[in-house]
Structures are given as structure tokens and as C-alpha cells.
Amino acid sequence: MDNVCRQVNNTGFLRKYLPGFWLALALLGSLTAQAQQTEVANGGAAAFSKAEMSYLQQKKTLRYCIDPDWMPFEGLDAQGRHIGISADYLQLFQKMLPVPLQLVPTKNWAESIDYAKSKSCDFLPLAMKTPERSRYFNFTLAYLSIPTVLVTTHDKPYLHHLADLPPQPVGVRRGYGVAELYQQRSPALHLMQYDSYDQGLLAVQQGILYGFIANMGSISYSMQQNKMQNLKIAGRLAGDSQLSFASRNDEPLLGSILQKMLLRLSVQQQQQIHQRWLSVRYEQGVDYQLVWQVILVASALGLLWLWAYLKLRRLNRALVAANAELARLSQQDPLTGLYNRQFFEQKLQDALALCQRQQLALTVAMMDLDHFKKLNDECGHLYGDTCLREFSRLCRSYFQRPQDLLVRYGGEEFVLISVGTAPASMEKLLRAFVGVIASTEMNDGEHCRNCTISVGAYCDVPTQELDSKTLLELVDQALYQAKNQGRDQLVLIPPRG
Image (cartoon, rainbow, N blue to C red):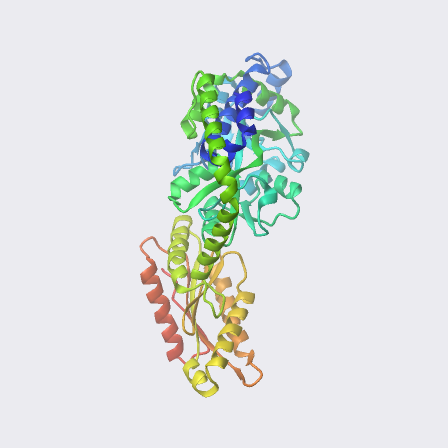
């Protein structure tokens, strides 16, 4: 299978024209190769030494930490039980061990890493070896090799190298080894780290990120679970995720024990685990003749298409660029450069769904320039346009975090959507912004005035019953309350409960 994968990798046409087939075959080859490596490395069997048995008897319990939110590889179910690929491996390990395995609960992967570094747990069942982590842990042979892929929206072209990425931010999962490795390989790469795949993929949908880098198993699982139809896997990147057991380096016997148990697992046992959790299916035998027939047919089709492809390549690039620009303009307000109302409605639904699912704080703030009609009548519409542009500039400079989205809702009304910021912090920020606008002179060379704004805002973790229409109505009512109370102020919707 290794030879087949290398041959597929060397066929430029399969890589360009059959990306789904190529990725699936690469994943199948990687997982099968890793399973064969662990069985062949030591003849498929090994017994614990006296020193290792003495170590286990003294330990009495082996403690481990996991990533509680990294399915299908590992996670916790609703009852707090360890599930996923690593859980199945540890069930087999437990049958070989004379001492129990004990899960040490953690809130997230970063806390699991910290626990392992501080020796609060003895090992991590799934970890990627990096130069930084090698200072703290011993690693077994890699027993999972998962292709690294780039996820983008459907309008982006397929890519195969980091050098092909435009100078736009790309997301990765916070604390994962892929972030460290890719930042070392490409220092100029603008990586933004997110606490969950859901948050990162939402940022791709919103246009905050060009794409999101992750292993194919996790990202496919997340896209399927959340039914994200407008995203695609836009290419496989160099540097697969090589996953191993990582154990505390002050107890080297533990690393030896984990390695021996891993070597005692058969290819069939490992394939059964992978079949259960990954979408790629394993077969006991490989029909190499069929594989080569597929490759030859695909190559023949590629030769037939080559002439037409080369001729139309420049035209297609121009068409893609034109469509991308048209899509951008259709979502953008021409006067202020902010997103328009058409773009806003879908993004509000996406942000509300994410916050309800992840129990994150959501802020929706509607801002209205006070007495704007009077200002237009007295100073003219050109000065009114200057005020709108200057207000938009101040909004962008004040709300510039990746999770902030600004929209010109209509006329002099603007809306801010922000995900994940604590309500108290957002309230403080909005009140400060009201003061900033009041103290800023709007000057076009002929007129110079100070404007004020009224703001109605929702800052809370949304309930499951709340929908986007009701949320907008509540925010609009708060805005009118701010105007009725004298303008130049913020009115918050009272928190639930």
C-alpha cells in the first residue's frame, strides 16, 4: 500500500482532478502502514521485564489525560466517559496490565498538556511529537498517521502547498502540535488559534479566515456533525499528523511499557478500531490490479483533458477572481466598506447557533447616529456621508478582534456581532465606545461637529429557545429605549434569570 500511495502521490492528475479519491487513498495507506509497522517492529509480542513489573506494582495506578473534545480520536460523552479511538486502544491495554488505568478529567487539551508536564497524569494516549513537547515527554512509535488538510469555502481554489496560500489569516486548533510545526516551517504564515473546530470553521464561513488547517479525520467529523454544507477540503498539505503515546520522561520504564503493549496489538485489532471511528473502510486484502486500473484510467482521462485545461487555465483564473470580487462586493456596503444587511442575516443565525451549541456569550449591538436627519438637512448629504465613513472607521478600530463582525444595517444604523467575549467586558467596551464617539469631531474641511450615538445591546449566553428574529426585536427595542431616555447612551437587555 505504501508503494501505491507513492505512485498516486506522483500522479499530478489524481492530485488535481480527483482530490477526494486521493485523500481517501492516502488516509487508508497511512493507517494501514502504521498498523503494520507496530506489529512487525517486534514480532507482534513482548513481555514486561522484571523492572517494568516492579515499576507497575509500585505505581498501582496509571493515570492519563485526554483531549475532552477531539472526536473521533478522543473525547468525553454526556456521562463523562472516555470514548473514541484512544479509548478503544486503552481498553485493549487494560487487558494486558496488572494495574488499573485512571482518567484524570481536564477541561481542555491545554490543561491536559499542563497536567502531563506537571506529572499530574502519567501519559497522553494521543499526542503529536514536536520539539517543544520532546523536552517533557517520551514518545512511542506513531500508531496513527492522519493527512493534514486545508478547509475553505467552496469559492476558493484547490491548494497543495503553503506557498500557494494568499496573505490572509489561516486558523488552527489552539495548543495542537500542527500549530507549532507549521509556524516553524513558514514563519510568515499568519496563524490564528481557536479553542474548537466549530469556532474556527465559523470564522471561515464568515470570511474572517481564508481557511482552517487540521487533520482530515477531525475536520470531516466536525463538518458532518454541524452540517456545514458551504465548506470543502481544498487540498492536502505536507506534514501528516503523526500521533503517538506521550509519557512522562522522568519515568522511562513507562514509555517502554506503552511501546511493548502497542507492539502486541495485531493489525486486525487496530483496523477494527479505525473502522469503527473513521469513515475510510479497511479490507483484509488489497486488489492492486484494480488500484492500478483506476490510476491508469484517471491518467488517460487527464491526458485527454490536459490540452483543454492548459488553454482555459488563464480564463478560469480570471473568472474565479471576478466571481470572488463580485461575491465580495455583493456583501459589502459601498459607502462604508462594512458588510451589508444581506450578509448580516445569515451570519447572525450562524453566530447564534454556535453560541447556543457551545454555551458561549453572544453580543448583538445596534448603534444609531443621533439626529442624523437633522445633520443631513443642515450640513448636506456629503457631510452626512463623511460622518458615516468616519463612524465606520472608528468602529473598525475599536472592534477589531477576529470574533467581531460589523454591518451597516441601513441608513445610519449599524450592528455589531461578537462571539465569546464576557458580557461584563463587552458592556464596558460599548459604554467606552459611546464616549469615544461623543468626543470625536467629524470634520470634512467645511463642517465640524460632534455626533453622538444610541446603542441597544444584547450581551448574554443565548437560550436554546431564542431565534434570530426575536433577538433582533429585543435589540431594536433596547435601541429605542436609549433614544427615548435622551440618546448618547447604551441600554442593555436585562440578562436572563
